[in-house]
Length: 101
Image (cartoon, rainbow, N blue to C red; front, side):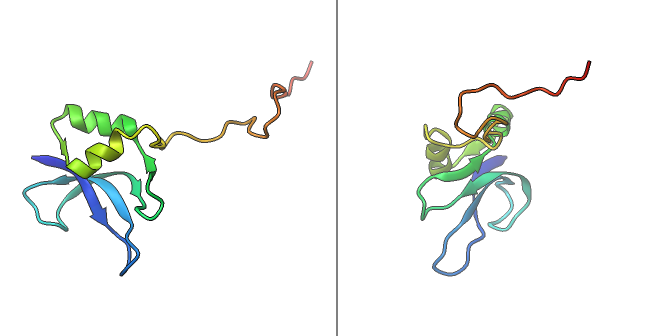
């Protein structure tokens, strides 16, 4: 059975976690199938979460832990694909196209 859980990668007194899909039968450092994102509890919000892959693994039967479920359902969770577009300068002008006649 697969589980979506946190895997600690931070040093002493500086927690930092990866959100991973792992085999529940294996132990704490067991077989990690895929890394879905990261979580920094000092900031309070996930840094990046791949929501598409998380929903894929949930549909395949992977059960998230309570903490991961609250992180996935948080409205301010940033998706891994979210990035500023090509026109992220703040102006409302459309991006110019290079066309040669």
